[in-house]
Length: 245
Picture 1 (cartoon, rainbow, N blue to C red):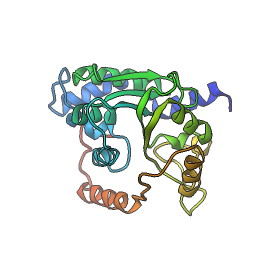
Picture 2: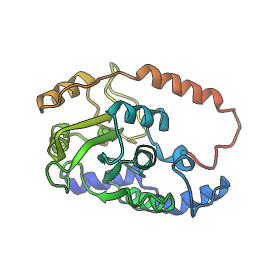
Picture 3: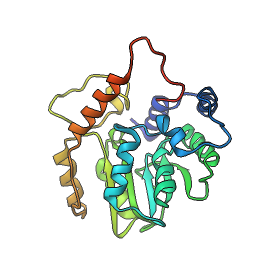
């Protein structure tokens, strides 16, 4: 698959057309003022990863983020985590994403949360990042590596743009004991854009590139419990909320 074919496949997977307009309509339907919203207003739809905003906050605390930290959110989508890191922790965040519609909608939402001074969006590839060496204090990824086959290149690029002593903070889905997985899954409608690797393999890759463990945790059990809790709250026949994935 060529780079252009891959980019087209990813945009087909995630782009929906008129996304910004759809979100604004959903905000109105939920009783929100679409001209001024908070990160919490948007949390049901823009934390597109397991355990939602709860996981974002836990990861940020573990990473020791603080005011002024320069963060690169790799594959940051609509920017939900980025706006949370800006609003709750005072970080300066750059979102890099391959889906152009996500970047456009993310910029719109960021302007309406009055966080454009702290969060910016860059359309581009994580395998060829348009940033100088040592540009960031923290590289952040939440459920973005599943679509990337060349993880060696991904983490090499991340290592390059981190300052000496910087941190990689990740929350990713890894391959389990059952292969192949069943499709569709949230990140891929079919196998050609799904690239999971076992956690042990990813860990070895990272240490081989020069990263040193601060923490390496399996949060599968917490994720299962969160999923059970969400399923228990959903009543059969009840319409889906106006704001949501």
